[in-house]
Length: 158
Image (cartoon, one colour):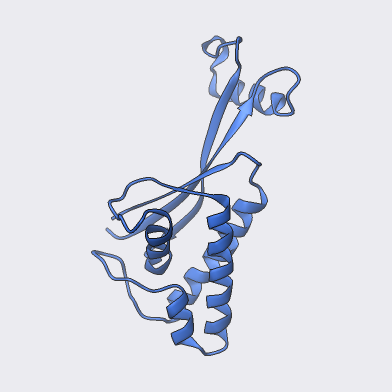
């Protein structure tokens, strides 16, 4: 048991013959074996995948709950805008820099460790720093590959 955290990305894929996504659409339909199951009148789909995963990164979890869910923490899906992910990326970079320069208190005040049932340690230590690095790499990649209409959702479970 513990705090498991997921960020998923969902994107629209058009199957219209003039769309840029037509090849992707056709490949997904074939892989899934959907064939005649998909309407030809308005061929389209949403594709969703997990693009980030953390375990017991309670400071990151607290940020998502505070900034994107109005403080409500009920393991619910939380919509996250690309702008909010860019904000988290900037904050994680700042906290990592402060940590690396020995300013642990400042790093912890930027991304505040929080306690909870099975949330792990609230110490500002090498695990905290590792969570920052993981956040930076995963969010950077998720944003760099996000299309204009990509939708992100954060969800945690414990």
